[in-house]
Length: 472
Image (cartoon, rainbow, N blue to C red):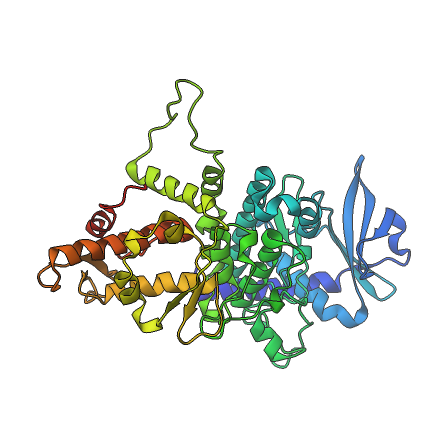
């Protein structure tokens, strides 16, 4: 869609909402046409009710906007008009005024808020104790990230994505609601004062902007949804803002032991301190953490032997069998810590691990959860630094004499690593075998703990690295 078409759509959405607001009818009797009216929450501006619709009673929600909140009401109307029919927001049923207050009528969501769902099912989701609840939560979040992606494609920023601002239909389809802080691209007047975002869901850049100045952004939406996702999978008691940022990596010190390693990997990206380091909503929706297959395989609930003869129902490729075995090892070694801290110099992680003959370590030492120290860091860290040490190892391997780089001179062509000639690398046959054994051990660790390996490796590198390992 051209920029001109998008701008035309934005222009049409604004005036349409303004006309709708101006034409809203005055109802002196207020709620007299509704039955069973009751307040939802403590804000005093959202009510549930029932009204006659043909021959049936329809459950609805009424959202109230005082005279001083007409700009907020208009903002929400503009978003609802633009996203009408998308399936990611509720449909506006009616708009009316009574005693200076404007009311928007929308359908009642039978599934309640995502917050209430987490309150009812959170204990089973945390740590994956209830496989059905965990997989359901993954499905909700995959669809929710798709909803965020959709509104961003429509050039809308929500501005305040929280567990309370996501509603669930009866079949657990998430819908975004409460666009009080929303922004349609190109429509924000200079000097607009923004309502304050919900505490503990606001990204750090909004907190730094100060009250009234926190303009919504796509990166801010990603952070807020990430904070909500962290509470859903780690626990509603989690205070995200209290999880300090690492001074050099810009990642939150989350209690990683409470959830799956793939979820942790996604959360660390979503909650990155720098807005430019956060993924898009589209990238988040396709992250491997939201695919239940890995979780189910690790729990022995997928890909198990059939009842007939103990043979597998489907023939797995060697690669599938390898990755599934790595996932089982990930579950096996979750929480099994290596007591002695490992100390490294940041610039020599590869040299240190290669010299330590990590390929000869015991399985517990290699695959257990390391406690790591770097020369320019204070304290011992078992989460973020553990990932950073593995990343540093492979980054330094790329610059070593063990591999050759191909593709870096061609624009848009990804770099691929190939095995170098042993003699050109200045290695004896014994040194060469030991080096590649060490690389294989670290590759195995990366697969088991983080679910992936450096994508720049050619198949020859994998063959050389893993040829001497028998565990998988």
